[in-house]
Length: 263
Image (cartoon, rainbow, N blue to C red):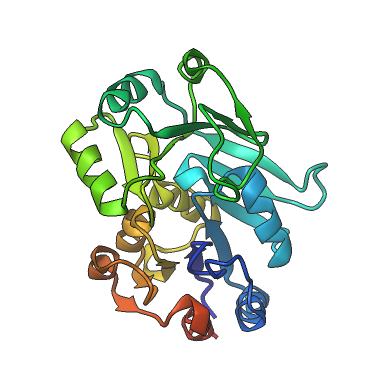
């Protein structure tokens, strides 16, 4: 059987929005791996937030793409931490943060410290960041190159926030608005798709044998990149529009038949 590269989003795809990894999904992932396919978690999560998902899925070898493509891990249980960072793409956050501060001055801001957590302008709502957060002065957020910047406006809707971001006119970066008033900003040209493409080349998998499944705007490039792009039923319409097919809802284990179609 020809090995496929399978890029899987985490939240809203592999696990429910409540953080539950349902047993049928876990079993399907294991069966696909045991059949010789390459499951690659491709997530907006930080390294610290990705590792528990890998552990729950028993994914100890292979690769994982974190921070929306800015960080790529090689998994190996023989390594001290069980992984090593093999690629990191960074950018200077000062220009975009200075611009956005004019448009959304009350937004919470986080910059990722890979493998550590986040530096934040103020604490995010409980449970929203997947790694420890440290409150620092505004100036400290601008001083070093980062893999990702996150903005959160708890008092706005996703549509309102998206409109604000579009009016700000971001240039020289890649960005995606999440399920709420949540904005992830990455270096230009960096996305889950760019991370998966690098992994595909490392594995020597033909482009025709790529599958990706996701449910949010930060999955758009990934679904367009894959030979078979699948959107979850709980995805926004604009995500479904770029997909080749639509799976069931995450709460109904919609990922399971997609994975089992490879067996």
